Amino acid sequence: MTAMKVRAVPNFSHLARMTDERGLFEQAEYDVPRREHGYCVDDAARALVIVSREPLGDAVVAQLAIVYLNFVLDAVRSDGCSHNRMGVDGTWRDEPAVGDWWGRALWGLGTAASRMATPGLRAQAVVGFRRLAQQRTTDARAMTFAAIGAGALLRSHPDESAARSLMVDAVAVIGHRRQDSGWPWPEPRLRYANGAVAEALILAGDRLKEPKILERGVELLRFLLSTETRDGRLSVTPTSGRGPRDVRPAFDQLPIEVAALADACATAYQVTGDPHWLTGVNLAWRWFLGDNDAGVLMFDPSTGGAYDGLHAHGASLNQGAEATLAMLSTVQRAGDAYRMR
Image (cartoon, rainbow, N blue to C red; front, side, top):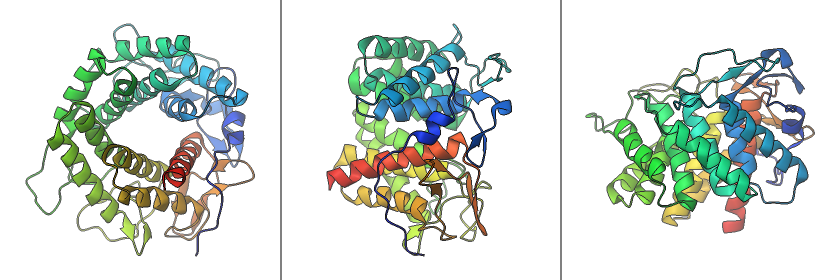
């Protein structure tokens, strides 16, 4: 199937419909929010990244940004741990801890601290970031997301010691090399949001002025883009992961994997200036447009919602928060890439 042509402009209608005064609902049945499943920091932090990137002037986006910032800040405890899941009644349903959501909260707050609309909002985000940055974990993905947040904050606060220290520690967790020269990835299998690993190292190499770390991130991104491209289109890692001998294509593929690759390629272009990486961003947007292993459109242009997953027989038509945010992020990156050409 040839990818349809849709202009790369974010449509926040579905995201706004999925958001109330408290937060962003996690799941949807088709395009209808499933309120009974409540909210989570994972999604609110990703949403905070996306709305913080948007230019000033859109009142709806500005209000969404405040909702997501307040939700993430409310999850942060004084010791730097974070809640993740909140019920529809506004009660936190889990114990504060350090997991993927902690890393994503740092990503969201680091981006907000650099790019939100007003000095007051940016200052609140810095306070929340510093509180979370007290903690550390040996979990590679959590530290990956945390490092991207640190890189975002260092963009506007280059002397921020909490971000710099966190980034150094993150590299120690995620940047090691395996002995298998035929499989350069630092894990035995690709997992999820794999592009974030390469992006974190590229940012660390740039922000810390460490060329070898930057080179390692570029090497991993080159390997990942090659591994996840098949017959000129993206064929991304499924939910079961991908190892060196796995056969492609494989399903179920998630939009978050495509968005992470687009983010990494966009960051690689910003840091290196190599226009090759804009091709990766374009492939990611084309995946949503139907240039994928099932040849189906992966979002609904009429609602602004993205479909939850790609199966061999087509798309899951539920339009949950994670998928919609992944599509919006990719649209932003594709729009930036078009303007850069």
